[in-house]
Image 1 (cartoon, helix red, strand yellow):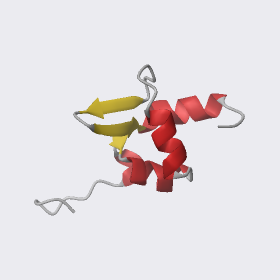
Image 2 (image 1 turned 135 degrees about the horizontal axis):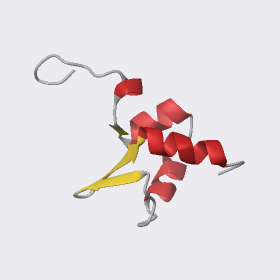
Image 3 (image 1 turned 135 degrees about the vertical axis):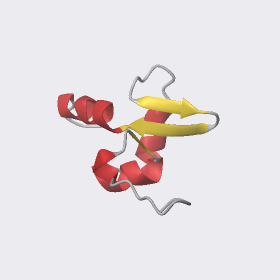
Length: 68
């Protein structure tokens, strides 16, 4: 919950933290950090030093992959 007592369900969030994405996609945090280090990946949102996973774009990316 945030300071206003509002909790957004993970499936409705636009962007996920690495930890949230790891739980949501069942992919290890180390692999997600490796993916997030690609400066040209459009499924990654950079906010200062933080890297967030754009949930829907990352889902589309995973749908096209056989393995990661």
